[in-house]
Image (cartoon, rainbow, N blue to C red; front, side):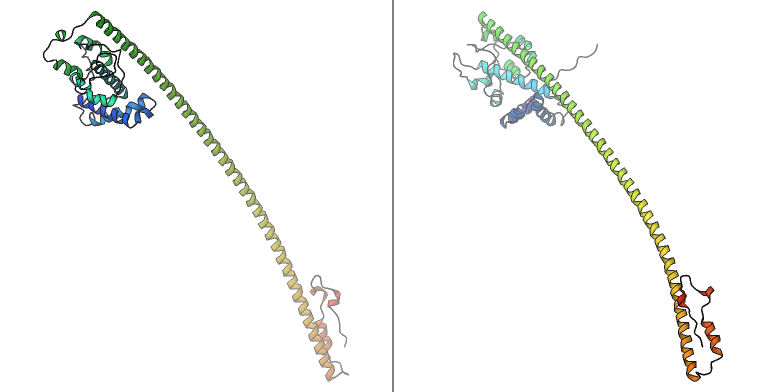
Length: 332
């Protein structure tokens, strides 16, 4: 036969850590700022787990969730209201015998500091009611697992409950109506909790959908940016290629112009050199003729015609572009 799983039960130390953390967050206004139960009770669950289960898993085997903390807080508030119902003074006045609360529950003052003026569970009853085991067993749906039950059972001064309290039919009916009211309220709370959870699930799915849409838009924007950059790179590369071709063409034209210029300059230098030589030769011939005329102007030097003939420029030795006026013959 398969063993039944052990029921999760809060230890006294864990309950104390829970109520201390809840009271601290309630006093500093942290709880009122939180919008969902998960955000309210998740830090409390983490605080309790860190202080007990994380340090000593063997002594504190349970790791509590925020839902466990929410249920426990609800049960604590309910139990506090039950004890508060018992210490209410008779009559219509809203007065309570606060010191008497510790006789029913040793931690009553601690919970009073935390929960404060929690409303009563159901309309006040003129006389206290006995806590019997059957009633507590029937209230397991709110998980009333506190030391209040144990202390009440151990602190009854060895008196029989039936002897200490007497029940009347009208009190039984009131108690029944009260528990029916509590059951209805808890049913509504359960329905509200389920509705809130569904709303949280819907909000979470909507949030995820928006996140997916934003990621898709970011991805599309990134792709467009990459395409734009590629187009810019292509245009820049084409522009550089065009500029390179233009530079090559310009360089080629410049080389051709320089070649033509060098050829023209070479021709000009050759022509100038030839003309210079011709002029020098003619000048020397004139000087020689003048010098010969001084010694003997009546007798002609037989070497003069030969020399002058050598000074004449023959047609085949002329440079292209020379004029006819560049050559002349001097008669003796």
